[in-house]
Length: 104
Image 1: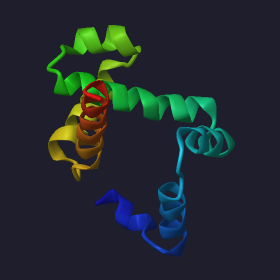
Image 2: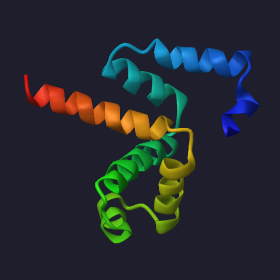
Image 3: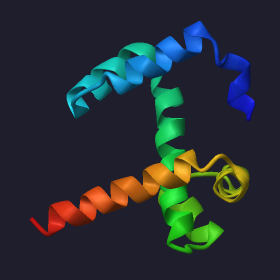
């Protein structure tokens, strides 16, 4: 795993700070303080690309919908296929939450 390089006290502390976020407002405030808009937009874009790839959308459709380059789309596809499963798991969890909210 690439993340092994930062698995130390500082990395652990940072990830625990993410686990401590309780609301969407907490998330917006935290990431607004922590990251540039470009960095945050890049993460959001990759998440959207992952969702569309899992819906079997074409690279052309994904590029048009998200503004992503085919290089970014390919990178996200490789992450979904060969990564640690974290992105895939989060996309599925969000889809499940969205589905359960629709049925309430």
